[in-house]
Image (cartoon, rainbow, N blue to C red; front, side):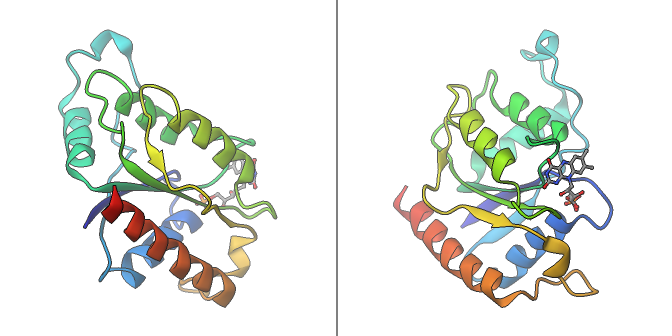
Length: 179
Ligand SMILES: Cc1cc2nc3c(=O)[nH]c(=O)nc-3n(C[C@H](O)[C@H](O)[C@H](O)COP(=O)(O)O)c2cc1C
């Protein structure tokens, strides 16, 4: 099962990237998770949407061929980080590769709420006609105070969070299989 991972932070030592790496390693038997860089994408420009740059075409082709998409993102100013939104805007135009695609949203923040407000916006965006992804319902992964849940190597060590991720990923894998 091929899953593409998009991480909404390009920060060196990003907590969200650490969480994403944890998911990739822990569930490698269940899914082949491959991260795609969103840093390399240019700003979305409708002028060139019919003749998209190669980096955008390749990005979209990989997503089109994947069985599902996993988003792991921080919250910026109560919403979706611009760099992630930019990638989503590319995905929503011309070849609309997210339509019907199973997706799971995970988020980690240093604050208590663990990206609740970002994910509310992201779910709205994913319901738009150009994206229309099949977001796994009822499995909201909000990792608040993430800095207290990782060890010095960036490894997720908080057992309740790990247990919850175990159950969510199991549900996500079945959701993908049934889609
Ligand atoms: C521009 C900016 C805006 C932020 N806004 C929020 C916010 O609205 N809610 C929140 O919980 N944390 C917010 N934070 C703190 C992030 O949770 C924290 O920086 C986190 O480490 C970012 O994720 P990363 O480690 O994956 O880069 C913000 C951080 C930045 C840099």
